[in-house]
Amino acid sequence: MKKRFTVGQKLAAIKDYEAGIKLAEICRKHNINPTTFYKWKAKYEEEEAKAALSDKAKVC
Image (cartoon, rainbow, N blue to C red; front, side, top):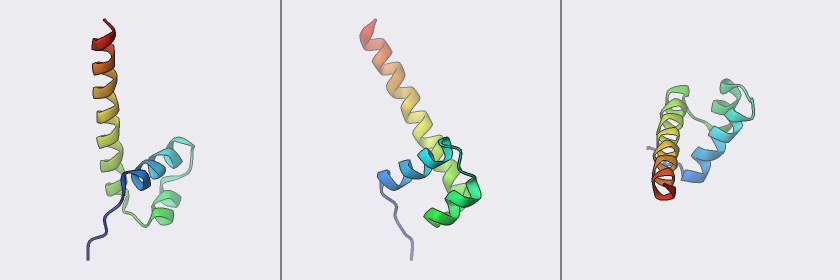
């Protein structure tokens, strides 16, 4: 059975990483694989960059 994670759960894991918690601890806490974590991180960083560019375009 495949478990689905909410956006909030994904962002919580990323925030833990940004707070300096080791990846192994994050993966254990959220019951995920490191590869899954890095996929989430890449996805949300990309979305943040796109949002920042669109906000910047609206200002100019």
